[in-house]
Length: 244
Picture 1 (cartoon, helix red, strand yellow):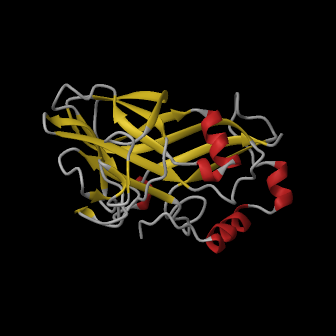
Picture 2: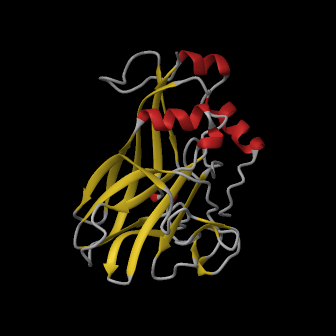
């Protein structure tokens, strides 16, 4: 179910399933190199997979000029980029990380991985911090009150400041999508992810868009958190962090 309602009981179970408070403070073994210090921990979030198969804290949606008042919150894919002069796509993704990661951690590195399944042309795909709360919705290509669309963060309830979603000028990363049937990774600003953890009420996720939204027939498609065939291909957020 694609609602932004994360049940405390579920996330509490996740936290206990991963490590006790004492184990968390010691930190899980991290990778070698910059983030491989003994006091770091690495944790991934992916619906139905990480931190456990009970996790359902990822919410995502496709928004498009083609159907500006329709919600696409339960579609199994997300498109990014301009398909034609009338149809531009963007994606939104949010991950709930509470209470699995303590609020006072220092984020060393964070990345979002998506599995691209379709491509027209090539796309320089970029990630920006979303600037406003949005409701993922539970339909795919239909009108639904209270759900995110191109025009609204909540249809018939709250408009975006600008059509296509509110976001700032600072982008986390850009990755060139030049082939399909493979994973791509977007590095996210560690300070941004750290702010999501310390102040969950300010976590509005990210907006994913093409750098070039004018040149048509440059559109990428990746699996969403609602992909049903294999949960391992859903979007995945990985956070490497340490305690202060």
